[in-house]
Amino acid sequence: MLKAGIPRNELFFTSKVPPGAVNYKDAKACVSDSLEKTGLEYIDLYLIHAPFGGKSGRLGAWKALVEAVEEGKVRSIGVSNYGVHHLDELEAYIKKTEEEYGLGKGGVLSVNQVELHPWLARPDIAQWCQKRGVLLEAYCPLVRAQRMDDPRLLSLSKKYGKTPGQCLLRWSLQKGFVPLPKTVTHSRIEENADLYDFELDAEDMRLLDTEEYAPCAWDPTTTKD
Image (cartoon, rainbow, N blue to C red; front, side):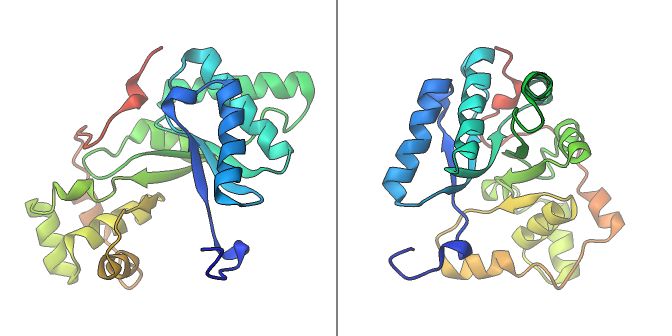
């Protein structure tokens, strides 16, 4: 993208500390490796991919990301697949670190990226993050196309003249999430962006309040180590 002449300020690049590297030493190495491989001067957003590695590993990896921000290597940091108990643990660490070393020294939690859709709305995680101004990025917002024939979704598609996928992405936006649909097909990319000429009404949002807990991917939010 840089070779194509796209200005750096028009790109937003996210990278992650992989599950097997959730500790201080490996997380620091991940940041350096990302910069070397991409040729970027900084990474816009760096996430801890999963709450693995135990408490010391998680907090060590977070410390490494905080230092990367202080060094100008990373702009914003966050986590992925963190349940409320993981978030509480991190919040307590940030608070304690700031009490000891000063405001901002514990880092700023900007993002929690988790699987989110009507069949996995995660109200506990959503409320925790929204109360604290933590952005929720929704992966698998299209449920890997596993629910496109759901009667509720089909009725909304017919009502609004939109595809079932567009209705799902619109639900995500109205929940305050940032949906992350994945596709390499140009027409699908355009379809996924065509969401701003309609809005699901309150009754239809309630219709999609399934109260189900049905992940279509992995679910590290429940890990307890």
